[in-house]
Amino acid sequence: MLLRYNYVMPIPRQTVAIFIALLLLVAGTSGCLPTIADRHLNRALTPPPYEAEPEAERLHEGLFIADLHADSMLWSRNPLKRYGYGHVDLPRLQDADVELQVFSVVTKVPYGVDLDENAGDSDMITLLTVLQGRPFRTWSSLLERALYQGEKLNAAVRGSAGALKLVTTQRDLEELLSARRRGEPVIGALLALEGAHALEGELVHLDRLYDQGYRMVGLTHHFDNAVAGSAQGLEKGGLTEFGRDIIQRAQERGMLIDLAHASPRAIDDVLAMATKPVIVSHTGVRGTCDTVRNLSDHHVQGIAATGGVIGIGLFELAVCGDEIEDTVKAMRYAAELVGVEHIALGSDFDGATATFVDVTGLVLLTQAMLGSGFSRQEIAAILGGNVLRVLRQTLPEA
Image (cartoon, rainbow, N blue to C red; front, side):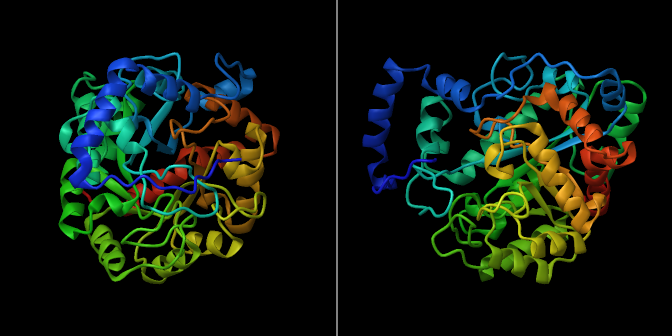
């Protein structure tokens, strides 16, 4: 069970100097704390190496694999270097035969996150940001945190000698596919925002993130914000007027709308005005795991009606289990409800949560799907084909 605290820890700008001094004192004596947290939080319940049956290995190697959610840019690891902890880096993505990884950007998380309801007046990402030695501008600005993490991914792309490609347009996507068909081990990367509170109430900031390469916008995270209510917020309200402006602007520019963590009322409001497919990047379904965080049958059907996809997670809170077969069970339930063409993978890798495997263990998901009776064509659709279709329908052409 997640712990809740009855106190809050606001970080107003006028006291930031004192706060910084205290944090620097802690950092000077405990500089390894972020790495310790990374190792502890981003575990694989079944650690590598992974070995699958030959049939699953052969099928997996031939798939277009896309994962809709990894929070890797939050941590101090170099995306281009192989690590023995955490879930995702470029070498492991290549080992896993992943072709497209969505990198989501976290900017704020309340202290003592609760599954059911949270206030938004505290933030433990501030502490992590300072202890990792990130630029001063990121210490008190959520927008600057988003811009910094976006630049971190862009820098990795530039330093990868072509092995990592930022996907911002349909043309980028087709170039990625062509390179893979030629046998080049290039990985596509798509930037996503987890929680529009990082826009700091300004529509123009969405354009700044777009210009940096962001192509997916998650409305909320664990708390209500100025855009919409969260499934785990206090009020759990619908879209605000500012939120409606965000939806309209994002769809006009070719940015995907991500309903992960959104309240039921907010989901209803988005579905009522959506003109393009919407997604849920990492979730479960209430039909197999009945929590406020997960989607009702009604919302699964509504998202499918837009032509969108639902990314099923590889973590316990999404599927009410601790085995990869629990993810497959949720995928099966949702597929029987709305069709295989609306189901995808949304791992929540590097999301400060233990996942069943790290990215190199996705072959075990392929194996479990084969064992559950999914056909090869259905597995190909769920593990990447459906995401590919939605990106072709949503991203700007060039």
